[in-house]
Image (cartoon, rainbow, N blue to C red; front, side, top):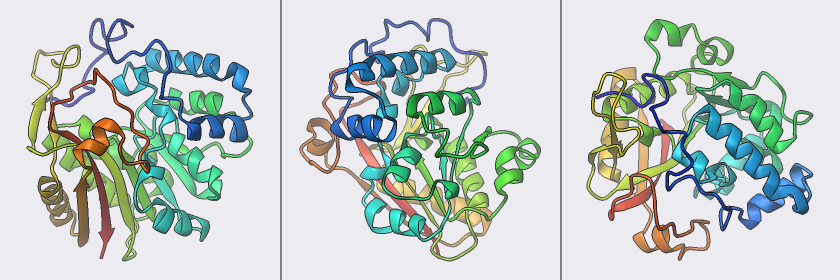
Length: 310
């Protein structure tokens, strides 16, 4: 199956007429996002929405991800994980390191800093180098998050390229205590999810208890799903799919990755209840009802996962 980014941006993808390009902020600007932008970034409420629209349109110009059109960079996915307060923050405050893969505009790292994690131990990676400067522009924190902590790297690159790339040369194999992947793995088909998982395991610390965690779109019925236009075809016309997991298929994926890399793992995955996902019935998750979602089927759920090295 073709991976998501194997060519230029598809024709028409940057159009602002797609339903996932939201022209007006509604409940995307949550109280948590307002608090962080005001208190951490020092942005006046008077200019906050104007600031967000400007950043979003710059990010849309880099690559028109549906999540960018929907302002998901204002959602702190890691902080919604059940292990965030009980395990992630205490470990970070004790000096452990964290890498956010598929970090986009670094929103999860900023929430960690706001919640007391030392910025010196936090790292981010994404495909697009432009995200580093744009993240500084969004959060206005160049004085608090050191430069050189963002790595523009392609986690799906050929092995020789990946091995000589910034993640493996600047951080290095076995160097990271906690790796988070929020709304990231579901961008790929099964083959490329497996490849990504093995790359993540190469970066994970060799110490027992080292942790991988995150969330992604899941499904009661696992399997490949064809992407909708404009991302449904590769440059050569090959059909693009993404693999949606239920907890059992997700566990099989990581067991396979563990076998390939020789890393013993304890894996836990759970689907969020349908009413919580669609109607925001659970106040611990700041989800909002969206009438039109990108590649959403009636059985779509949020899948939370944690993977520990044993």
